[in-house]
Image (tube, rainbow, N blue to C red; front, side, top):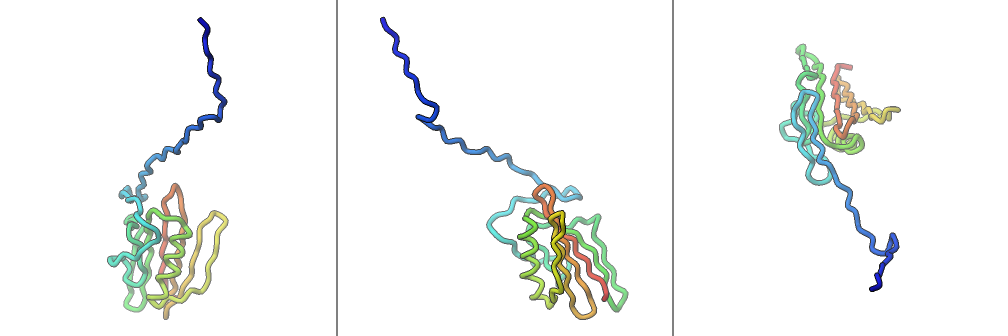
Length: 147
C-alpha cells in the first residue's frame, strides 16, 4: 500500500489571529479604581469639585494632592484629578469647557515629556492646567492663584 502525503504551503490556509487584549485595570495614586471609559470624548461632571473648572466624568480627585484656601479676597487651589483618557483628549476637554466659565486662554505649552500646560486668566485669578499621562492614566493638575 502506498502512502499519500499531502504537503501544504505555509500560506495556503491562513489562520486569522486576533490579538488578545489584556483588560487594563487602573487606579489613582490614592488607590481609587478608575472605570473603563464608554464612548468617545470627555463630558463635564456636574459635581466637579471646583464649580468653574470642570472635571471630566470618570476622573477622580487624588485627595492626598488636593488643597484650597480663600482669604476673603482670592482663592488658592491645588487639585489633582486622574482618569482614563489621553493627554490630547483631556487637553481638548479643557480647551472646550473653560471658556464656558469665562476663563480666557493665554497660552499653551507642549512639554518634551508629552504633557501639555494650559494657562488661563479670569478677573484677578490665574489658572494653570497641566495634563500628563502614565500607563494609560491621565493626570490633571489644576492650580488657581491670584494674579
